[in-house]
Amino acid sequence: MLKKEQIIVELMNYGLCLTSKALDYIVKVGINNEDLEKLGKIVKELKPEIFIISEDTVKDFIKLEEIKGENSNNLLLKVYEKETQEQISPTDTSSHLNAREIVSDIEIISDPSGKTMGGKDIDDFLHYFRDRFEKLSSLLKMRRDVEGYIPIKAVKNLNTKDEIKIIGMVKEKRSTKTGNIRFELEDLEENIQAFTTDKIPESKKKAERLVPDQVVCTTGRWMNNRFLVANITWPDLPFKNQKNRAKEEVCAAFISDIHYGSKKFDEEAFKNFIHFLQGKNGAEKLAERIKYLLVVGDVVDGVGIYPGQEKDLKIPDIYEQYDGIARLLSEIPDHIQTIIIPGNHDATRQAEPQPPINKKFAKSLYELPNVHLYGNPLQLKIHGVNVLMYHGRSILDDIIGFIPGLSIDKPAETMKELLKCRHLAPYFGGNTPTAAGEEDMLVIQSVPDIFLTGHAHVNDFSKHRGVFLINTGTFQKQTDYQKSQGINPTPGKVSIINLKTFKITLIEF
Image (cartoon, rainbow, N blue to C red; front, side):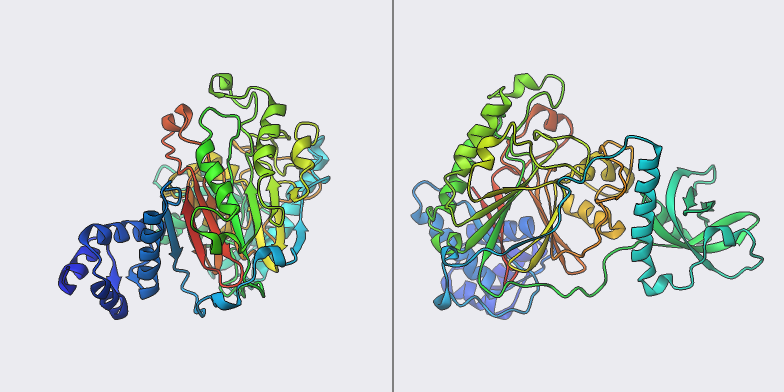
């Protein structure tokens, strides 16, 4: 039996501490050294910002090991309740209701279906960027630290050394010969060149994080026909967001990037997930709480998505791909409402915002009574909880390349940047194709409770100003292309959230 000192030292190796109750409980039940190491690894992998382990976390871990021991197929590899730092009473299982007995509650807030045409002439682009500027500048004007801003055209007529604030869209960011950053800002009437300075190093750090075509408020001084930057403010989310909660104990599961039809589709893991939803594999109590399944794009692998894809396809026919995934989804219990948006591999146009998956190719999906198909992005409420679904193409294809310190393996950090600039794909004309029209439907106007993305093929979790950020992972094993790009997918991991308590469970199938 391990002593308290040994337990403390072992978990300190993972940067973790224990509450006194958790330490006493470990001593009481007699966890061995191997399981203690396993506990440390699971906590750091799934929730790296946690540094204190509670007694409940230890109990959940022990229950996990018991489930694994009883399950001869070893289908449920990991179950772990991520700490959300919410002060919530434990779930009362005595009052548990099966999700089958609960009426579904789905409200669509924003869906691009039927509204995605545009980009035909110069007027479409003018309307598009005007709409983007007006929406994002309105969000900025709601911030107290933006009060007192002036139009750009008024700056050039000033004769003052006082700091001033301007709101503008970022253009042509580049480094100067002195190592500072120059970028152009423009509003609806005028533009101006802004420069960082060595005297204010913090301004350079912030300017390095600017993405073209986003709208920011810049504070600085107009000197010698140059605007010297002192500070940059993003629209961002409010500091205090009041979270919406379901009134009933009901759960939602989140997945994406199934890539049915690919040779690397992990069919075994996906079938294990279906069996779990059916109440098998030793986790019936959790499974029977699930009322919603949200699928964040790339349902199939598609055909002709990239050169040479045919060699990677197990099913080379797009109709057969959708028929096959429909057969699997038809095995999900009919009380679970499945909501699907498209990704860049699905049969719909590539430019965002995307209409729903084309019914011509996916007729079998549309025939499933509990499956609902919408466009990308989609914002909706499920049981009163506001969820923003976006496939996430801009995360890997554009944003990571502009902002220092971001990583392919941590997509949730890049998701934070999208929330800060209140736009899902700010860089127009980059690797993320965007359709220009009268309205920019990629602006994040309504603050979500949960922000979901896919595309990165890495299950990741974080929080930003009260909003839960989840990159949903994949059911596709590593492809040769992903290996060449340094992408290490996490196939078979599914995030499940209790919409009342906001406890998140991660299951690996």
